[in-house]
Image (cartoon, rainbow, N blue to C red; front, side):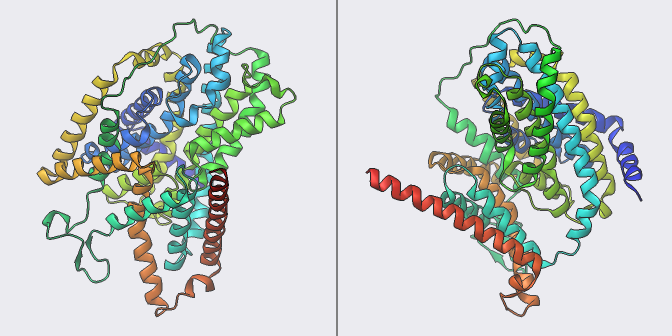
Length: 499
């Protein structure tokens, strides 16, 4: 079956009325949360997880994916118009996008961001479609040792590249792994860490953990803090870019697309790194670098293309290897598992309608985002006028109703409060709660494959060094650990000398 036949199968799934509706709902929600600062895709996806139980796997994943890549679009709107990034990946767009708005060229900046994002999203989706079959064939050669080494690298790289330092990052990931081991032992079936609580015998419910760790913790952290946003009412101006804008923007879009597509695949890189890297590339290669920060259209085109390309290619390791490279992808992996689908090299064969339906829906979703972003700019900006304390009341209500409806258990509500407090404490300690989710998801995967590899090798740990693929992953992990530890030690010595 060739690529065209695969895409035709995906099209038949994506264009059903129900899936089209959920695709539209997902990208609309994604755009809205991209506009609103403080309400990111992690919170929204975790909040909606319990509410997707009654949907088909295709409808659920299509909607949640639309929220993820739709948020990358929405963040550019407020970055340009009010100098307030809704998403971290759109922060760099403020530098030149808002300057263009002050010069009366907000319409051109918004159009360049939308068109560049559409091109990058389309290319990123095409890369997934083309890389899927060959990468899945390679992944089919993976054994237990290769998967254990791959999970090790993914966890270590993500922890090392997260703000807060490698020590805190690894510590939070290990804490998440510990919570992931609650329940029955994968080998013996014995209950562990249940403390006599019957509800813990099947493990901790992922949706309850995710909602508490992000949605409830966000509300607790914002109680009593003043909220408000000064929304600019400046005229947007002409919406279509000039010929000179197009001439300057299209090379930046191409470079940003290539860079974002690459960084999106790497564990821990994320959308923010792709957009900031694209901005630095444009500034360093420009003939007039002094234009950047003063309204250079390349400073909008490159980063916006990069973060949207990265938001598409971030699905590659999750879908084809079953290993998420970011916290949001860990939530997506949890959504797959909730619906009884195990992403990985066998997914294309076991669930072709879901895999190819999701890919085709991404093309449809990117087209819908262009339609949503340009004509409805006024509506998105008005969202900033909604008082945050109203928004958080609705978030808390959805969280409690969704979690209780999922199992009808008071224990789930108590667990929701517990993980909300845990998420708040982690943030107060300067740790990233998103790494807890990664550890929770990847920990059991690592344990299962590590123990299986040790069983097959009769307890010989050299099995991880004797196989070329696992050896490569182990070496990458060691290099990352040494590099981050070295920089950590140097920074600590410098601070000690200053003191």
